[in-house]
Image 1: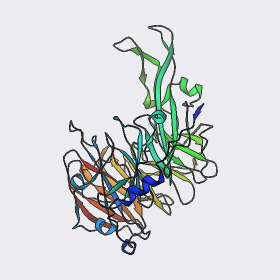
Image 2: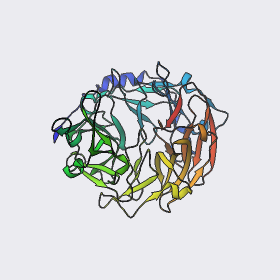
Image 3: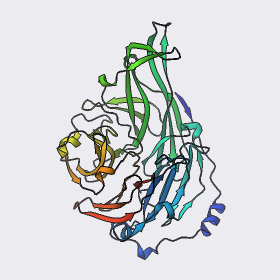
Image 4: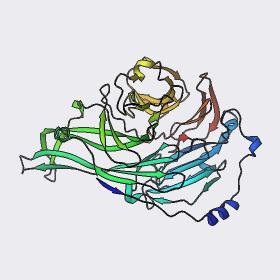
Amino acid sequence: MKKTLFNTAMLSAAIVLGTLTGCENDSPASGEENEGQGDGREFISLTASIPDESGTAGNGGTMAYAITHEEAINPNFSLNIYDKGFSLRSARTARVQGSDDGKELYNIQYTGEDGGVFNKYQVKGKNNYFDTGQELELADLIGTSPRWVKAAEGIGVGVHLTGSSTVYEGTAPNHVFKYTRGKVRIALIDLVKANSPNSTEFDFPFPAEIEAQGYSVGRIDVPVLNEDKTKIFIGCNVSKVDPKKLSYNASGNPVWASDNANINLGTTTLVVDYPSLQNPKLIYSTVSKVNNHSYRTMTQHVGDDGHIYQATATSGQDILRISKSTNNYDNNYHFSLDQALGLTGTRIQAFRYVKNGVGVVLYNIAGKGGYMALVDLNTKTATKISNDYEAGLNFGQYQNIAVSGDYVYLPLTPTGEAGKLYVINWKTKEVIKGAALTGQSGSSYIGSY
């Protein structure tokens, strides 16, 4: 295993202080903080994606705007984030994370000239986001389009699987499949100091007998740090080919047919030690075979009980549990969204643990529509929360769900259309259709922080 250390020089305190002194602050005075949320939070940041120059929806960048709780629950408050918002730095839709108190946003630019560059913003209200200037270049560690999340408060983890290739022996027409394998790259990100205290690189650790059956992993994502801060758990996108079904492409290269329909390997999670990033191992669920790598939304969370709850997003309907005592799957636990809602074909696209075993999920049914539910992970029950845009919603790019006190904030806009900010009291299940959200062609709201 290759291991590297990486740090960036911080900006001098004098420069930062001077910049901060000259920065306009639109925040309310301390006595004006919102009390409705119960945690003293000032702002909820909303984000939306915009199209690129060719008009491809959600592919051209990210806008942000910070509102108060009172504005969030006010149906007479209207926001056009596309005209009034702040543009976060990124050539394409950014991978945005936020602090628990909503005071900071973190972003790693996605592709482009500055792909892989970390930026940090202080949230001052409205479109006033103060760029701290604490840049961190991560492209050499995890690429220019890394998958990354806030794995715990103050701690980011970026991951990337690269260089996946198939090794074979022999000559045409009798090539023999050996394995398909890529390299795992992981980098820790100190979100407070904006540096990377550790990184590593190693071959994906499938056992040889599993690789020989045609199994490989093409993507890893949504790393989470356990309660004891001793292990990082990383979701994996497992696929399979049939080593016996050989054909040749137009260039004469051997190709083995997909065999994903016959995957019998359980949902797979990569585990490494924290903070050393050593001792990679794989754990497997026996109650699910669906991938757990998600897409843009964090779908693994540490519960109040210390266990990790992991959704099989974005094609599964399961929530699995990783035991705090064994750091392995608790295969006696299985939450089925289908069963909880009495439906067939639900697919979780976003999952957020809230508190006391309660979570919120955004899902579709057989790949269509956009629906919401509150789930009780203790009783394994769910309550659907209806919304006015179900048929037209697509949560494929949804990135984050803000929770503050008793409230969950869900901006809902079909692509190119107007919508509403839904504010849900997760304790009482009261639904508030709050702020009006203006639409724009090729654009949609993708998260709250």
